[in-house]
Length: 176
Image (tube, rainbow, N blue to C red; front, side, top):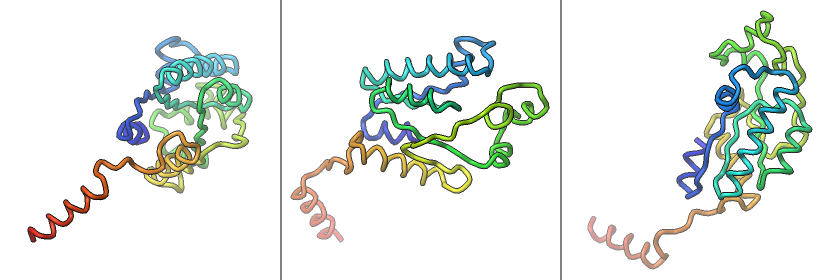
């Protein structure tokens, strides 16, 4: 939804999904702290390259370490942290890959919130509560945050001048 909204506003963007990038570059990359850092550093580099070329990078990742997020904030131009959160029971219900179940069964290790720590973000730009907020409300809050930082225009640019709009309204009224 965010990508489509940004596109409609004239902003080219690219969605970078942490899991896809992980599988594309190293299929056997695990979830140790070092491996998580490696994957997030790679994504951070890609985001930096995209933003330097006027493409909005939308990185969708599990980034459990505050120091790593702080480093990305320093490196990426106009970094905006969107913290998506929900109680663990909600996440488990929505887990169509059985990620949490496999972690609880000991089949996979170092899963944030189960068998590895997760540092709550100190000062995210937007908090999106997946168990409370609709996707539309989440998108609205993200857009407001982008507007507040002057990253996107606060108002849509008008296609017509006020005079042109007035003339069209008059013509419509006269045809009724």
